[in-house]
Image (cartoon, rainbow, N blue to C red; front, side):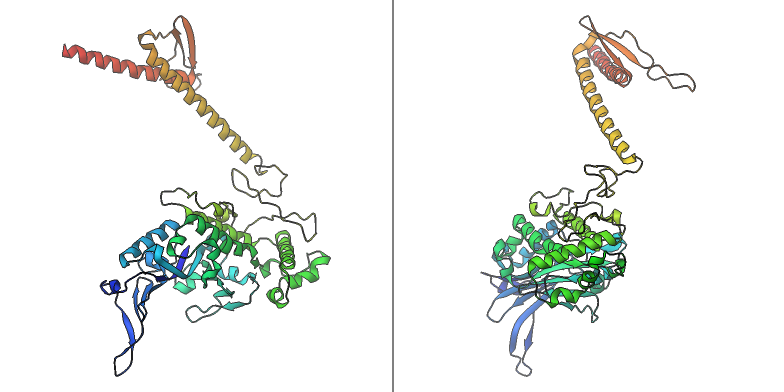
Amino acid sequence: MIDGISIELSEFDFRLWETIPELEFSVLTVVGSGEERGSRKAHYKGLDFIIEPKGKAKIKGSIHKFFNQGQHNTNRFTFEDFQEAVARLAAFGVNPQTAILKSFEIGLNLNTTTTKINTKTFLDSILYCRATERSEMELNGRTGYGYAYKTTNTTYKFYDKAEQSKIKAELLRVETKFVRMRAVESYGIYSLADLMDKAKLSKLIADKFLKMIDETIFFEWDQIKTTRQLPVKYKSKFKDLRNPDWWIKDERSRKERYRNKLLLEKLINQYAKRNIKNILKELISLEVSAFVRSKKGYEYTDFHNLKNWNLSKHAAKKGTDAQRIVCADSTEQGEVKKEKRYCLTCGKEITGQKTGSKYCNDQRKCRDKAYNLKVSEKKKARQTKKQKEILNLIKDLGAEFSLIRTTNPNRKKTKGVPRRKTSIIVNIGGKKRYFHGVAARFFLREFEKKTESLTKQQQYETDRI
């Protein structure tokens, strides 16, 4: 999630770098005199190590690529990977506490193949982001593969990571770059060590990355090509809402822009076959969950601010068949979309069903499956309790065990001949205890084990005598 960084090392002696053979510094010189001019720079595995004329030491580049030995930054980069990459910088004298941040990026590489929507479709659907005009990014000398939205302190980017990295894949990059550190001062983030603070980082991601996705407006033209199916009262308004220039042409209050955003998203949910923004958010949810998860398979509990953001496990399953999530009963602009609900068994969306529904109405299969699972769990719990009771009885009874009645539990079942239920009766101090079926067979097996063990022990003691 953390990628590009620019840090300045305070209280650092740059001469340490000159002793490291991996760092081969080059410097601009004046032709003829050979006089050095400007900074010295060494590139190593995705990072530039820079020594300025006055002795300041800086590091710039992709810490994600540095983690991958300088090869690429197209795969998943978790929080644990980031910690390991920072630990590797210690070999170059980098102390996270004194590594002052000048700029850095947080972003995700999203594999869109599971949604059956290509990266270009996601890019073309962006209407509005942060009240700024978008600028086309140039990737490998070509345009049309990404857009940047620049504000005073921050730049937001959406682009084709596969095109940038020259790989064959569908990989959408969503990124927030902090070009001025005053954008994150309120979060107490100043040094590289602060980025390793889970509480600070999770709040930053929630506020500056995930919130940006929530506020960005997406619209697929092909999903609602005409206004034919829309209510008459919205036809004229809709033509403006789907125009990206309309959102930034006139000055509007935040409240007014928010109302218009809700209206457009409501129309999309009601009349489009899919909501590409919801699909994107679910992809991001899965990646965020992977970012905070440890290599042992456990999730970090310290990233509290990331737990409640649209977390869903059904992005890959739903694909392009995203169900509508807003009812069409009301046409008021201020209507808030209903919270999506999913079947607890198969994961199918059931928002349209009556309130309180837990399972989809698919011939009761999911409900019956859930019921059978509960019954099975209760039965297993009862059996476990019974087995513990039997083991304690066998341990305490010893030779007092008296088998009164039983069938042969090992008898093979014959077709057409009913198999009698195994039953035993145990005398305990004159009182009878009955065991049937599974419990009886378990009793017999455990008792035979104990009897066999006692026989061997007696034989061993006899041989010694």
